[in-house]
Image 1 (cartoon, each protein chain N blue to C red):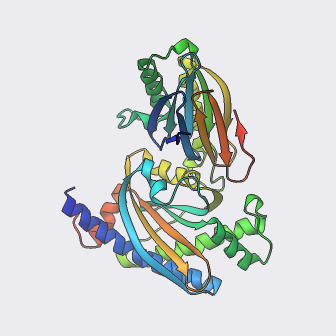
Image 2 (cartoon, rainbow over the protein chains, first blue to last red; image 1 turned 90 degrees about the vertical axis):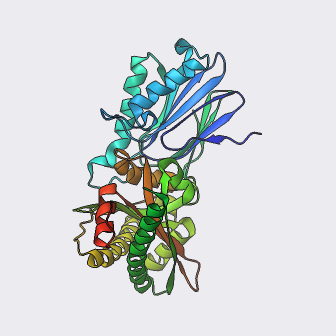
Length: 158
Length: 203
């Protein structure tokens, strides 16, 4: 069995079956997972913030530019946009008691990703979003399945 | 920054955090009635993707209390306890059986309050040293995967920077199994201000 490759904050990774990818400890961050079942190729972008500022330093950090970049890069790998499906994981509210504007950035992150996916006509087939629990998402490019582990809840597969 | 310059900055910030952590550990040891010892403070400049790895892995379960400075100085600051230490602490304070997956209101509140006390002592010591008032927001606590706990602190810095300066001081009890660490993630403007006040021009 191959060790899954870790995708850190503001990173993009693309893999082919039977490779696996993992995002560990997603809190308010969102993992946008795209999969082309036709050629069994998948990709993840691990975004931290919802919208890129006008002067964007790093596209992978933001939900809007990051998702766009992921779609573009995957097309470079021979993926057909029409076949792509999306899964979204993360976007939790980790510190609900915090009196800061940023406390609910998780929801904005998932909305940001969702609106770009709509632009590309990519369907969101499954999601595990919001709440106030951190998640680790294990993506298997052989099946397109995402296994979600949390600190205390039972593991689930989407 | 040149390498030499970076080295000096890290040296100064480390000293700064040492004072804060020393004071926070004193408060915690009074509170728990155990003798605590601080380890060496380590300070590093890291890309965001590497911070949780630097702290021991994003999928470790921890209890983290987080607050944010919102005065002249801007910085995220956290107290992080590993799973076992959080249980020890809460059992000691509440004299109840502790299940981290479903903390009672009083346990959650205790966790927050301990974090609050530590962080305030940390800030009191450093703010005296550089003579700037520090205004922390009310803290909140979460028991979860380390990566998830760090998301909000990193997100509040992330709009402006890609790499963060992280300062980490671990502490442990001399006679029982209790440990944890303080983590400070200052914004760049704050870093400059600290360096100036500590007698190092930031140019």
